[in-house]
Image 1 (cartoon, helix red, strand yellow):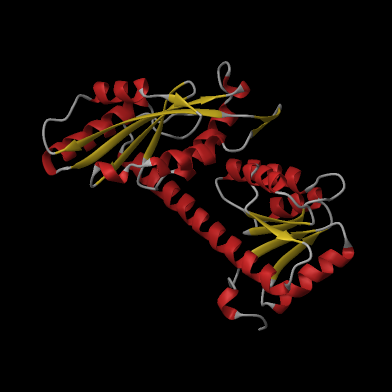
Image 2 (cartoon, rainbow, N blue to C red):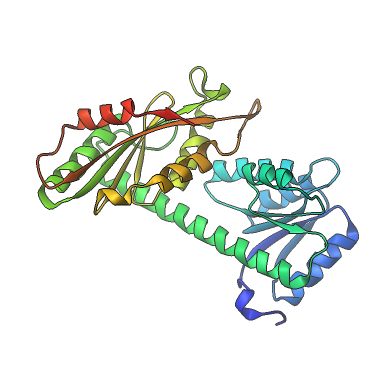
Length: 307
């Protein structure tokens, strides 16, 4: 096996996309020399999507500038498919483009990393390794969250599940919040009630079920597996979090939610549409007499702000 074994994810699945034969040959040779075996090659974005439909990949390595579907358009299609399938694919674009603005725009549209041409094999391997690590971690979180959700639904069959998103309903949200408040009142610890309103052209009226599902999956991916996300009504979601103390609920949670939910446009059946997120939270720390559930939810709603 060639390359540096410490920078190799055995069993990693890769899809390589480049319209230039020389580019494909360079990438393929470098990846094989480094020990990767599961490598599928595409000459265009549409062909790459066909390969991913046959079998998902952990990492997609694509040229940014390709005729027809370029790297950013391919990224949009992959992200939409991932949200529909509940998984994550790391995406690396290779490019000769310079300038911060172009890179920032690409990051906002879901690209994970870049390779600036020309580059050495060592850099390629390091970035593939990092992308593989990120994809594995994201998919582990998604699988854990899905397992916990299935267990939660099994234990709480009497509570309704929102048919559009598979999340708990407002009744489930209130009941869970009451349980956590009671535990914090008796034993200590902090409970955070958060309310999220999603805004955008796709949510101007009654939201389409597919759009709700995509947003719900973005929210679930942004929070911890132990946090509970519910759909309260319409475009409003609720989030229940617990921690040993109030100091554990910090701005990083909001930043992560904004990045995952509204940091890039939403692919819909009618095209790509922007999103904005209004977020409000209320935190109570025990022990002591806990506030009523309705009060905590009202405080969170009154704290709503828009990005």
